[in-house]
Image 1 (cartoon, one colour):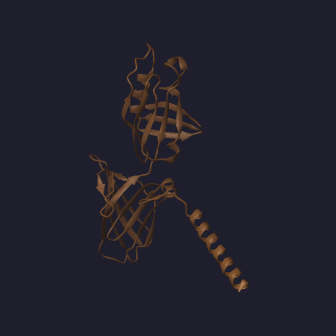
Image 2 (cartoon, one colour):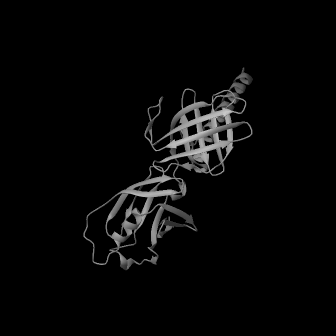
Image 3 (cartoon, one colour):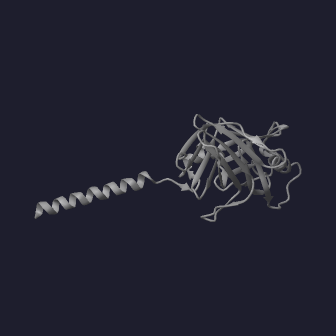
Length: 259
């Protein structure tokens, strides 16, 4: 009887240990668009229902997955987008040894037909295997995954090509804290607190809906010049812990990452 009880206790402990291990191993933030790892590797993700399908677009590959027989997972080489001239619409024409597809992304509010969640982009996919005559037409919703490297606190070093100093501002150097998950930012403009939204797509970054407190600034304070440059930004680069914001005219702002 003692031996039997000992065995039962041993099996119980093994079972608990196994379950606990699975819980910790699978602890990862996910959403309808995939894992955090997906959002770091792919700059755009989309999904659709009836039948379920998903698309992930990255700089190295484009991956289509679905519950459609013969199209469970198709991987295509990355291609450049074909951009519409009069609207925010991008088209990707892709092919591999077995299949072809056309992916169209439009900046148009889209509601998931099952969850009801609202996304900022609509996605259409036309896809077929080479042995098929007709295209399978699918529609769904998607979003751009904001570059996770932006998610930090950045202190201004250069403004419109010139190094800045504390004497150029009221109290301290301007800074911005970017939340790449919520596409928002906040910070200090050199005189007033500032905040707003960021608009992100591949190779595109804009600071929008900028608001600030209304404190009077001392003569010569460059806060106005700083916020104007921030709102003129269209592109960015990150290198050596520096964030450079630019537009077609050139470099506007250079920030240093701080912990």
